[in-house]
Each structure stands twice: as structure tokens, then as C-alpha cells.
Image (cartoon, rainbow, N blue to C red; front, side):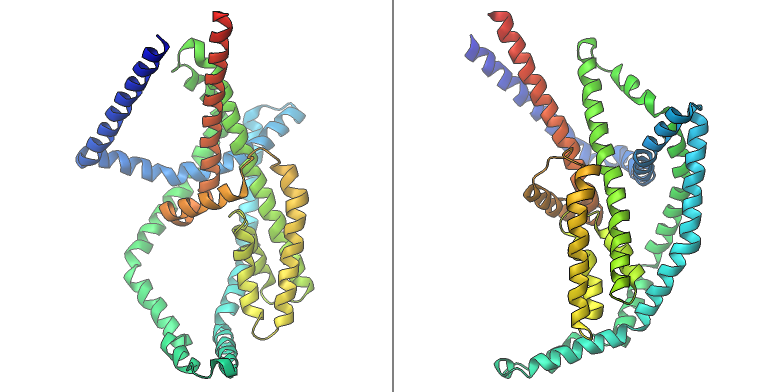
Length: 369
């Protein structure tokens, strides 16, 4: 009897998966029906993603403010959004001009850095072990002169002008729509779970609420934790670079904070610009940059990360590296940033389903006994 039931379940799920695969295949062939749907979701993806990120960042602040002051939630939302607006104005007026100034100075000094690289390679060429290799000829083949780099940049810029215009239009739409989406997320976000709950049978609604709660906790821990980590790493790296007198310390600190969003690989990517700028003329300073990043990462890994994210993800480092490789290959830079949280959500769902199935089996066995 048990074997027959097992075989029937196998047949049932095989047919279900076959039907699902057939539907997906047929859907990909009906462009005139599904292409508008794809365009609709791709248009909303960016604004909803940004608004969702800000929601998980600001919602704990709104909850804390309303709980402490006993004010209405709508007033708490308005106050938090005004604080967000003030922060954005400060970033535009104070932070971005400094970044632009240092970026322009870095671009102006690029020929000097390239010359340092060429001199360094020429010195290496004098090594007796490399006498048979014409290093200078190889450098000339690379054509890394400042003029050639500018020419390649301008040609690429002209060829992608249409994409730039489209990107500007998309950015404008995103800037306009994100505040409205964020406002209603903060205002009516608590209604999402009850509305989803109604679509499921009554006997499984409690489990759905539990699953959504776990997913919400995972996302909230990851996003708020990453934001705190990025600010901490950017600030401490900037201070460290200032202490050892590195040029463009503010720019490199911001780069270190942004790249810290990429688990495990981010610190090395953030260190790379500072090392490239200093290693050819001041190798000792390049070594000190490595020491600064090492100290910051130790503080982050032993103090900040355990307290703001903790063990909520519980993902092995090797798994994270594999996820980054696969997600980056599938979706590029966006995949690198979103791969880990997406994997964490999928993992939460799988663990919950397996736990629920085991509990059902245990209940059935207890009933039989």
C-alpha cells in the first residue's frame, strides 16, 4: 500500500512538473502576449527594488519613533521621510561635489600613474631572467597612452549615446516614482501579510504568516546590517587613509564602502584603487593601505557584522562565493549585489517547507500509533 502511494505521488509530481515546463516553453513562444507583461515588470523592477530597500532601512526607524513617542504612524513616516530628504540634500550639496572634485583630480593625474606603471614595467624588464622578452614592445602594443584611452572612451560614449538618453529617462521616472511607492509601503506595509494570507486555505494560513515573518526578518537583517556595515567601512577606511596621507582618501573610502556590499570579494575590490595609485611611487604607502583595510575588516568582522547581522543568514563562505559567481554570470553587477539576499530568501523558504513536511509526517505517525 505504501509503495503504491509513493509511486502515485511520484507520478503526480512528474506530471505536474511536465505541465509546468510545457507552459513555460509555450509562454516563451507567444511574444505578442507576454512581451508587454515582461516590459511591465521590468519597468517596475527598479523603482520597487529601490523603494523596498529603503522600506527595510526606514521601517525599523518609523516603528521605533511611533513606539517611543506614541504619535500616529503617518506623522512618524512624514518625519522619517523629511530626514531622508535632508540626508539626500546634504549628500548632493556636500558629499557629491567632494567626490567629483577628487574624481576630476584623479583623471587629471592619470597620465602620471600610467607613466609610473610603464617605468615600473621597464625596470622589471631589466631583470636578467626577462632579457629575452621585449617588455617595451609589449607595452607599446597595449597602447595605454592617455590620448588613446580618451579616444576609446569618447568613441564608446558616442556609440552608446542612445542608451545614455534612455538611462537618463529611466532614472528620472525612478526618482519621481520611488518616493510615492516608499510612502505607501511604509503606510500600508502591515496589510500585505493579511492580504496574502487570504489566498491560502485556512488550515495553512498560520504557516504562511510564519514563513513571511521569517522572510521579512532575513531581508530586514541583511539590508539594515549591510547599510550599517557600508557606512562603518567607508568612514573608518577614509579616516585610516587620511592618517597615512593617501591622496583621494574620501573617494577611496566611499569606494570601499560601496564594494563592501559584495561579500568576501568587496574589501579587495575596494582596496585596489588605493593600491594602484600609490604602489608605483610610494610602495610603503600601498602597504599601509593594505594594513588599514585589514584593521577595518577585522573590526567589521568581529564587532559590527556579528551584532548587526549576526547568525541570521547562516550561509557558508564557500556557498556565498559560488552564489556570487553564478549570480554575476547571470545578471552581471546587479546579480552580484542581489545574489546573496535572493539565495537567503530561497533558503529560508526551502528550510521552512522541509520543516513543515517533517512536522506533518511526525503528526501522522503519532496519529497512527
